View 1: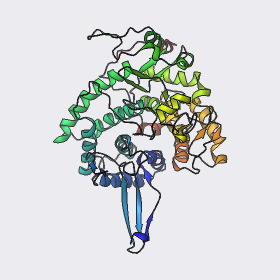
View 2 (view 1 turned 180 degrees about the vertical axis):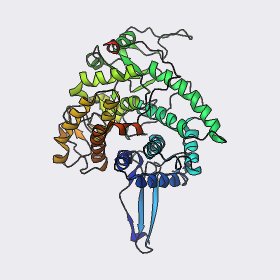
View 3 (view 1 turned 180 degrees about the horizontal axis):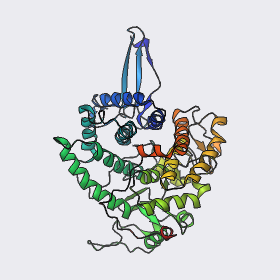
View 4 (view 1 turned 90 degrees about the vertical axis):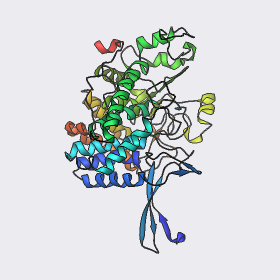
Length: 438
């Protein structure tokens, strides 16, 4: 029987999201509904990785159809990390699932799926994993390298912005969909408490603009007690030289990572775009992020949108942080490569901040290359000029990302299914960037 089994290409949960949005916009919600229900079923699968059992709430990174020709049967087989490069379980899959469930509910106006016992249980299991109490003193979520779209070692261990922004958005989505009865009531209370702390933490400690950079540059170290200004004991000499040239007087962004004695000053596209879409960023911060993209267009957008991270790791830094990963050489793949799928996130951020002309410019850049180049997975080079050295062609999420961007720009009202307005009860306490009053 095994000889007669045919394994088809896997479907990745995060990769399907832009396709799902395109299906919804094209009035094909049943496909999205079936996907959501299938993944709920897979969540209950046994999750064993080298004899170790994962938490019940873990969602698969991907699944594939195992077709037995002899028996004429098809079985869905989930991967929770046991087949992944580096054996890393995805943290983002569960968050994307919750976000997609809300998008389906918002776009169709049908709450019966999100209110079903299976979907309610699925949300609670996911939330139980990330809201569990531990020894951490931060409201952010501790994550390992490789747990997100950047699924190889890239030095994002700790509290990567991509996961924190998705975590924030998933919590807010769940808050809108959980039924306030039985177990749901307890989770609603926990989410409210966590969101309050997470919002304050991210808007204060992850935010970087010119005045804040100047403050870090002048930090004193080894400060004790609650009066400490340098709360994470960041050594000013650890600020990389490129940041001083990169940071314009107008603009700002959320740092890549913040933890004791470490600030990752790299700019990550997905985390900053999700921060805008989810309203993790205040309206002023959202404008500042867009100011930065405008000011640093060549570095962050280049010839094909959009840089996944800036800048690239090089030389000795690349060797020790990526483990000499040959796929993640400088300005390639996850290490400063340009990913067309990110176009839909940039477009959503542009529309939400009232800058559709920026999205139009980015889409026109994509149209000049993507079809001609065969819809590659990613581009290489400092400006994203070259088709990636190992990039697969005709990538579904590259095509879907472009389609969603185009449809959103043509009908901005479609943004409502993925966008969230600011949560008014939470009051930020932030220094204002110079760009906020411009």
